[in-house]
Image 1: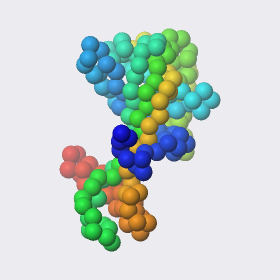
Image 2 (image 1 turned 30 degrees about the vertical axis):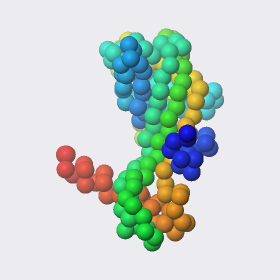
Image 3 (image 1 turned 90 degrees about the vertical axis):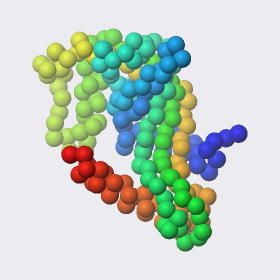
Image 4 (image 1 turned 180 degrees about the horizontal axis):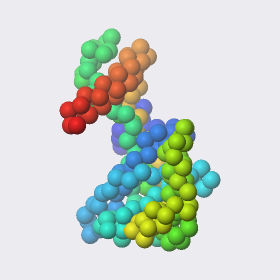
Length: 198
């Protein structure tokens, strides 16, 4: 049985890459002795070889599992929100719309200090787009001091699974209404939430 239903599955890898690029903070999951270890890390998709690149604090317990050939599961999360039936023009029940990308892959350790530094430079350059107000340089003395406390890694992606639950099973006008609600709620929710916690 396919779940979620086929109309909520996304097989277009280009769309999944767009999610990864727009929402690069990943949930990285490894398993040791039947116990999941979970860390939230920014991962960057490298177009040249279609790998994910990242780094982790060496004192993070998950770091020891991010070594050659170990399996890893990664989740990227896009926008999401509750959809009330009053959004639709037809009779519906409440639901939740969301975008997720689930990946499985094999870890490749990066032990070369220069390569780890380059991955930090590349990640910063990507995250600073489009304005690039800050540029990290390879000879940055603070990065030189930090390099001994992080572990670099790459992930060779072996499985792609898109979850695009966007009211595709509804008529066109209701799907458009749900899309508008997702856009509106995404903006409203973050403003309200940040005001509440800060």
